[in-house]
Image (cartoon, one colour):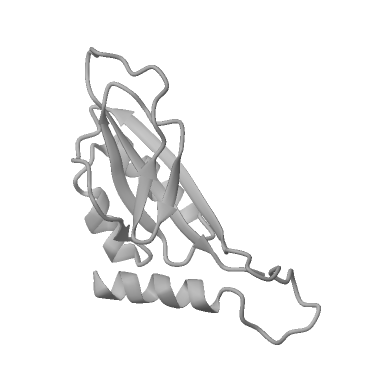
Length: 139
């Protein structure tokens, strides 16, 4: 966990640094780095809600993380993690229930799901929702 927090803090600190004049975009004073969050979900996907995000940047860490899910959800999480431009790549089960949150945001070391406007009281099977993403390095 300390490695995750240290890496995230370093990325946030260094995101605006650089001395290549005219190379890529420059952050405005006080700008925050871009955060990329993708929500993937599957009915009966297994997994439990988590309080903290897991660093799944390395292939072995991603494989170990998705082992808790059904094959369908594991494939979706793996695809989303590989498609992200974030570094580190983080993943977290943000909801298990009748509804899929409409979005999520990254706060410190965890994802916070957006509230569902009209939550359902009953459902046939729970839906597992996983947030995948992280801080996108500035270019």
